[in-house]
Length: 370
Image (cartoon, rainbow, N blue to C red; front, side):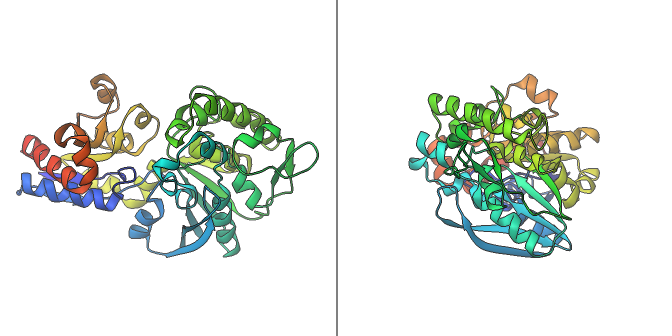
């Protein structure tokens, strides 16, 4: 049987290539006669640049940029011809914030400034198309930090620049300055399709995983509403657009700058040649850290499942944890989902993510191989 293994990264525990290798190795043990092809993927979040570099080549640039907490981190962007692929998570990703520091105050103050510094570097290198991968951020600042780094500084009524972070945006009166992006086409490769505001918005849905409690979520949503009004001066109705809430509102800021939105998973699916692999497949295996309801809003696993379903190929999901019901699973084209935490226990899966994922793949292979 021809099996295509096409996972995303597993949160902060495994990169997509590491997850693909672990699943493929386990599958080969469980079904040694199967032909297994590993195609690691990304949906715009963590691993976006590395996954594309592996298939497109080009030059991977690393530079020191402002991290989400204000201290320097190593940011990454990929140059392929006249196109730049900027991985926002390398500049403002949640992995830059240790778990013990994910507090309401950090959620209020985390900045996307480093993303703007990466975009500026790509612009200054002469690229004319900049694709910004969105996902996995520690920020809920509506992309204000990114805009400031590009020359459009959020200021208050008196013209004073605001401090970094989403909470300060409640005092935003306007943007001072204009980003210099002449001749540059912007694309937002988003991992989700959430709007900026409300119960499906950036603060309500993703704020808690970044450290925001109920009070901080309400405060950030209110501040983003103020900032959304400012951004509407550049693009009316931007807060309600698809993917405006991606990466803590970075999507909204990019849209305000004239970016078009593409589902990150679909973009990577196209560039990596996944469709050609699925054409020959008899089973697709995908996965991510947590297969939950957010996965159903444009995440990679459902993109892989959709591609498999188009060809009548069953798709199974291996994830750290699974909380999607069978009905929702079936509607998304997923035949079955298996959780490492259920098979090995949460403590063991965190202690040895690759080993426990590989063991689960071995067990699932014995069930599905034919």
